Image (cartoon, rainbow, N blue to C red; front, side):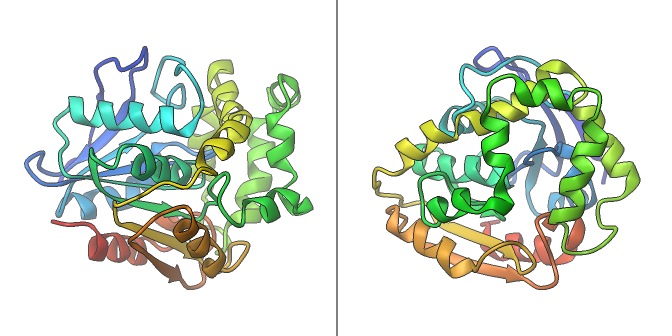
Length: 282
């Protein structure tokens, strides 16, 4: 099966690059990366998932091959852009999956646009405003949340040093040594080489306060949610499942991937594909 790279029609001033695999007549699976990654983190699982779904791995706005600044970096805005872009290229019966910031967007898709999707899979992420958000942002080991939210300073310090800065996080958050290869690190670094891309990534953090304020209001979330977490990542999955249920999610299940950190699609591709396939309708 051949994976294709396409550019979506313009949505809210944004054109998204997306790697596509599978038959458009099948139910769609939307895959979202986090920081500082790009759509290529899903390259190793696209063809396998494309056997079951119309599978679309997006570059988020301004990252990698995507162009155009979104109206806001709030996750509900990004969720609308991604869903609208997927709809524009024929996606239907969508499940939205993502890790890190992509997982926050997947949750926003379920919370705010439940009538447009059939499921969401947030992975290895904490949702702003949901338990254990307060504990996570108070943890000194998660210092970069506050640093990245400072206006302009992260861009000033990181520009020209993207590879070294990103390497720190790849090494810290991977549960399997060597999982993030040198080739993959180079791809991710290139995806954030433009000033607009670097700013877009930091803007995701600058929007956390607004995200948390919106998400803190209890909702009625009917869309089924599967929360996946690698057991080498920070925290117990039980806390995150409790936060989702307290937020108003009525159908939540959890799945732990053994010996795995944050980068599920490349650390445990077979387990990742299996967990998603068991959840998403075909």
